[in-house]
Amino acid sequence: MSGGYNPLKFKLHTQVFIAMALGVIVGVSPVGDWVTSQIGWLGDLFMRLLRMVIVPLVVTSIISGVASIGGGRAVGRLFSKTFLYYLTSSLLAAATGLFFVNLIRPGDDADLTGVGTGEQMPDLQTPEGPAELILNIVPRNFIDSMAGSDMLGIIFFSIVFGVAVTAVADRYRESVTSMAHSLFQVMMKLVQGVMVLLPLGVFALITRMVAETGLEAFAPLAKYAATLGAGLATHLFITLPLLLYLLARISPRIHFANLREPLLVAFSTSSSAATLPVTMRTLKEKVGVSDKVSSFVLPMGATVNMDGTAVFECVGALFICQVLGFDLSIFQQMVVVMTALLASIGAAAVPSAGLVVIFIVLGAIGLGENPAANTIVLAMLSVDRPLDMCRTAVNVFSDSCGTAIIARWEGETDVDTEIR
Ligand code: ASP
Image (cartoon, rainbow, N blue to C red; front, top):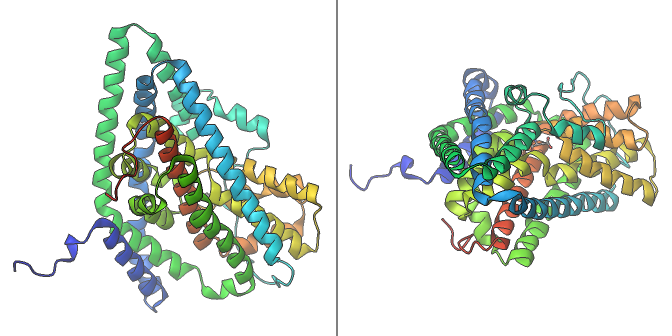
């Protein structure tokens, strides 16, 4: 029927919104558990397909990007800008968390007895401190890093490889660069293919999340969740837009609109790493950033720049102190901010990683081995998924802001000129 109503003509982000709404409705309905048992695997399939492309996408994009930037000095300049933005935005994020947790004091009257019993911490590794973090960057064996999705190792090797490419004779440089570039294009095509499954994957992930996270678990932790929500919302809707505008005169409205898809994917998957392929595609096709800048800034951002996680580490650690009745001095609160920053850098870009690395922050204020603190972390785990979804969206948004800002600083005028 011509001119008829065809839901498939909806834009992709509209389809994803509808999938999310349906997921919530089905998840809370009595058939939520049954539907989850039937289609939960589709959510996992979607995540796997995204993860499948990450390693080859990051390697080829960084090598072709760095090789085209030309020379170690240009790479150094881009690296300094990236470092400056990531440090600034993460520190602002941690400070925002500190502000709200002191203002609302969610832990003062929280009764957590009986919450979270039976939860088990996911088995993720926490770096011990700055030295280990730095050592972890240099891979012992690159193939091992690729096999284990060790992103920092992969990024380090790809950057030094890219720099070395710029130093060899023209004929070698050209052939390696063009090979990396061609492979990168193929990977981007693959990402486009995976996106076909996006609405279905989101539906399955949201249905499962809603069916599995019982609303009852939230009651004693509602104030904690609201405090974190206030911190994340302030960073997402005030601080980052201000940075966009003040540092690069970019319209936050246009940037938000262009970022719809990665934000929805980050929210649904709770993983900055799984979202990376979508973020890269969007920054290139919608925001209008060159491959040169985005392939350098984004993979690093997805791995080390986690503003939402930084807000969370501060709110979470101080919440625990408040529940236990400890009042921290200004100096101790500064220690929390600095270790929150470190923890957000060390957190893997996968679901729940932020909660695991909270032990870095707790350790710095002497609560690492405290059994009562551990019990509270388990209680927080019982409601962590929806909160993780929100902080992951903030993490991804900050990466995208940094990429757009740095692209403007590098003289790219086509960035965020219109909603695409
Ligand atoms: N899930 C978050 C991410 O992938 C990390 C966290 O748990 O805070 O960005």
